[in-house]
Amino acid sequence: MEPNTQRLLHTFAALADLGQEIADNADFEEMLRASFHLLLGALAIRRGALAEYDRERGQLRIAAMRGITESGQAELPLAYDRAQQLASLGSALSLDNATKEAARFLDDHKEFFASVKIELLVPLVVREHLIGIVLLGEKASGEKFVEEDLEIICSLARHIAVGIHGHHLLEEIERKAAENRRLYDGLRAIYKETVHAFAAAIDIKDRYTNGHSVRVGKYSEIIAREMGWNDDEVEGITIAGYLHDIGKLIVDLSVINSPERFNAKESKEMSRHPAAGYEILARINHPYAEIPLMARYHHERIDGNGYPDGLKGDQIPPGAKIVTVADSFDAMTTDRPYRKRLPLEDVFVDFRENTGTQFAPEVICAFCRAFLREIKGTVKEKRLMKLLGRNYDDIQSVGPLLSQMISDLDGDTFAATASRH
Image (tube, rainbow, N blue to C red; front, side, top):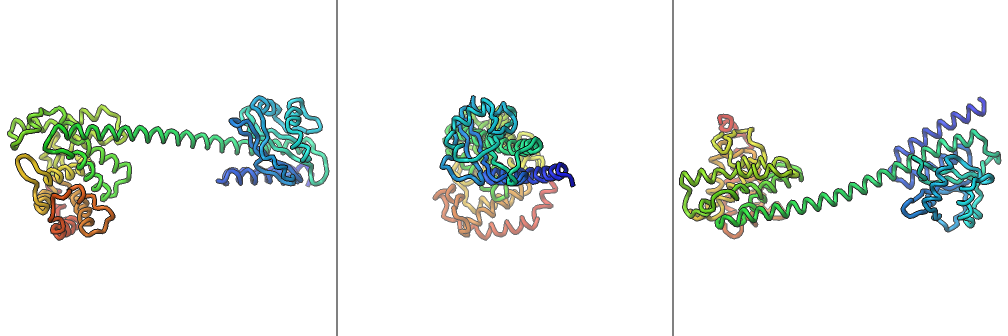
């Protein structure tokens, strides 16, 4: 085989190996070293060094070397204007015939180059910017570098330059992503603080239901987690719980604070709040798009007899079904001006009797499972019991009822009832 053909095949093989190394190696430093050694091996070069250029710090960092005694100098200062002068050279340069620009670079680092025996300087350039340099010593054969050798070196060097540039781009993307994430987290924190302020504003209007919105948010969170929702979905349903009654801000204060059960006129006034809440929330670009709908539909019923739109079954968004249960549970377990809180067993009996008509079976089942786990002590934190406070001393007694409800719900006892509505 002719020497030129053999050299060409060897170059193709080296390029293939180099491309694979750049593509597959997740460790940047290892990629630099392996790529550099492939370049040396392609032409059987005894010694050399590869340096990466850091524009911000204005220096070359020696990333790989072979056959060169450690000089103790791992970094070489290189101002940006000098770096661009080297970039403009664009090809492998023999140090015996260095250009004026290269000579300046060599002169800046006399001590370093006096300690190494280098014959070629190869700028690594991408889009007219210096990415790094490769310094190469003599070939093992002792032969001089010929034009074909320089072409091979430049071809391999371009691949290394692209690999370094790609890493820099990825680092910049990751840096910007981290910066954006910090900004996003900051905005989310502000958003959550605003949500809590809204929840407080809602509840302070009604002196009988202080803390109701926050509790509904937390009950909704617990149910959603029990149902296997992901973290983003859980955060969305929690916020929806906090804001579900925001429409009450436009309801007449005398109605909200009525000490008696609502009459027909007052009920009509109060029933405005889900649709009003939707109108308020729909104007805001929430991180979780379903929040306005959860507020609108938290008084809908599975049988279609709810309000404001009379939705039924699967027409009601899953999040609204959860908020409905959380809202009802808190309403039944807190004192109202016209009645005291209900015994816990009565609360779950109400859930059982209205599952498939008012409440979604899958939501009631999840809530019962979460509650039963706390009763049995199989969870680290008893959040439901903490939310109920010290108002109840009969919590343990509802365990058998919950177990039976879970068994019935898992066995689709309510499926036929639900399908008829």
